[in-house]
Amino acid sequence: MTLSPDRSLQLRIVGTLVLVVSLNGLFLTMLAWSVIRVVSIGGLEQPWELSVPLSVGLTLVGAFALVGVQARYGSRFARSKFDLESLEHQTPSDLEARIHRLAAQADIPTPSVAVVECPEPSCLTVGRQRSPTIVVTTGLLERLEAEELEAALAHEIAHIVNRDLPVVTAVAAMVAIGDRLLERERTLRRFLGGMVIVALFSGVGLLLLALPIVVLTALYLVVSVVARVVLAVNSIALGLFSKTREYAADRGASRLTGNPAALASALETLEPARPNRDGRMQVSATLGIVAQPLTLDSGGDGEESTDQHWFDRWFVDQFSLEPVESESQPEDRSNGAIDRTIEHAKTWLRVHVITPIRSTIVRVLTWRPPTHPPTAARIEQLQTLERRQQR
Image (cartoon, rainbow, N blue to C red; front, side, top):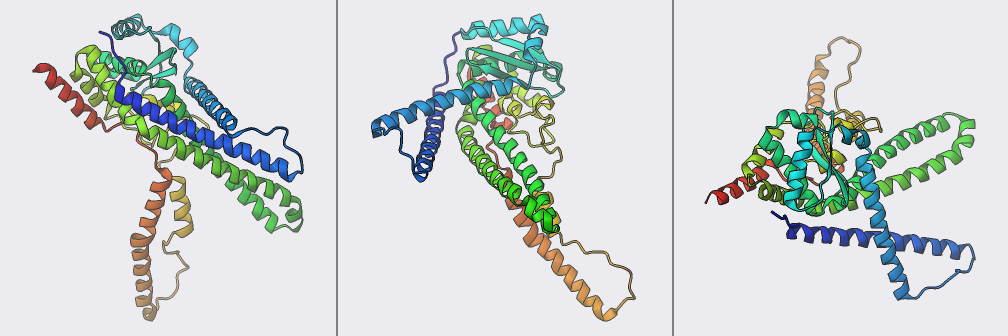
């Protein structure tokens, strides 16, 4: 059977592209305006003067070109997580046969396939639309039965048919970059704070470190603004079509295999494998059949591995109201009631004021758009498709 792209998903992808192109155009316009202002302040004459229609045309061309650069970078960013060149030659023949058969059913060129040594069960598609690679983890091969594996691979084939790979890869990569920039921002902040302390407690240091502190502060502000703009814009773009993308791929897989129950069973099998950290913005989690981050995608780039958010730890350090232990002193009954009242007040303040404020701020700082619908909702949709087939 020939599988057609999902229309509702295509509309959302177009809307996402319009948003990204518009924001790229706004960025280029602001950049050009800044350059013109700098030239004007410097007393230099502008080398050329463009009409409004020509300026708008050049801005649109530049905006579309920037989208192309983002898509190409996103593809390389996703592929860089896996050693695909060597892995593609070690793929089991039966897995390649499954992919070939499903691709033939969908009437698309057969994508390449690679198996990676990874305990987390997942499969995802990386690369460009014209040369995609389906990545399957050994954890997935170990956990899924034959029919479930067939349905999971059909899900990835449906993504290729729906042509959502370039957009989701580019946007997911940019969101991940925003998260990485926030990590760099925190590193700069710690380094800047150390320099300020040294400068304040050293008379000579204040003179020597004044210029580095100014430069570092400017760099910190630039990184902070860029990180938040990149993260916010691309998070909104990803949220426009991420859920629809998964629903469409589930429906496409059901049509290819004729067995919605197999995909529902596969999702139910994969669902208990919940990550012990928030990996939604890792590229492997965003592109995977479920929001399961892979250990291949979390190594040594400055990410914090603890479950507690950095702001939570900082807030507790700054505003902890735990009683401070003091040296033992003779008991003074007259002060006992006052001490207990103070401790009760501290406890009430911590429970009813400090903790709610902290939780709200952490939720705002850690918000990311969901990249997958709830698994229960996906299974319910597949069960509905199964009932329709049985009528």
